Length: 115
Ligand code: AMP
Ligand code: ZN
Image (cartoon, rainbow, N blue to C red):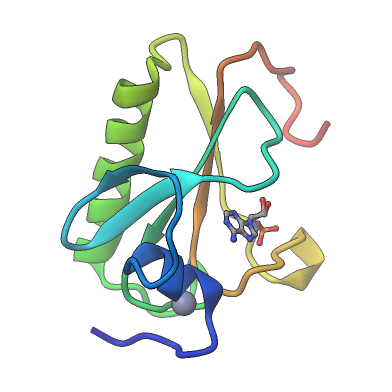
């Protein structure tokens, strides 16, 4: 499985650095964001390294991420809804260059995309 030895999310997703794991399977890991922006803020990441959503991510990895998001929503009780955000590139505010989905919930959000 291709990983980047200098990437913090590779290490978190593959258990090299301990983290608050919410859900894990062979393909993805979901862990608590270190600086939560909502009552529930979990990151869903592939165990393999991809820079972002448009870095040639195979379909089976994307499907596994969708399953990971659904599992996080179930585990965290987000039955009223939640928001998924994928910052893609520096101008979008991506600071960790390992593909991740932010799952945000546990509060009512505005209808606007950008607060
Ligand atoms: P982004 O700005 O979309 O790249 O999001 C990166 C996210 O990773 C931010 O919400 C950070 O709070 C979070 N983060 C950075 N380092 C860690 C870490 N060691 N454990 C958990 N979350 C982290
Ligand atoms: Zn990585």
